[in-house]
Image (cartoon, rainbow, N blue to C red; front, side):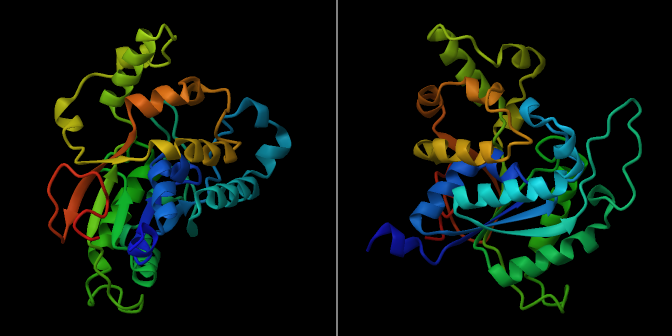
Length: 292
């Protein structure tokens, strides 16, 4: 039996905070699973309406005035590159609060939504798409953006509630997702490995200053349970990233690390298995371990 037919019935759901998160977190493994025949669905909680323009080439008044429409178009382009389907949950971006103390979040934004209210549309999508595996962010949001933290909260709520017939009874027939993972894309051991490999080759490392500030946390690093080999799909990941032109500078930090170095030194995307209703031995190299 071919890999395509073996995997054609498998379904994977990624829950992300903003358009571009699906391309900056786990995109190479996403593209790999799509190529294997897995049905991959991305849920985007907000429209990224309050996101900054991070690419100097796109920092123009007409872009800022139409940021919502432009980010939707960018998402469509990335979706085509990755080969995924996608739904918007329809919440409004909270923005990144700046200042000390930080200002209150804007009224009506995703970061202020009641968790049970925020989980309801996600429960509907889980029950209709019926994923075997779901990924989201850890309790810190991957980084402490209010939308990432709320994405974590509603994902945990929806994961539990979708299987419970007494919860959200009007949101479809109950469905038990078999495995739940946290994304661990930005981890210190990966940065150290790439930094040291660059220096060995006499290449200037983009990680030097960051690593001085980034304190080791072995307990946190040990939370990674699952390293999915997907190096041949790193170029697809990069194309999806570049599609988010308002957010990604093609001459920026990330693209200064040679592709062959990335593929050789850290050929995986990394996850933490948080909940599972199937048996699989750790460490894993596949999000569907125990399900296939």
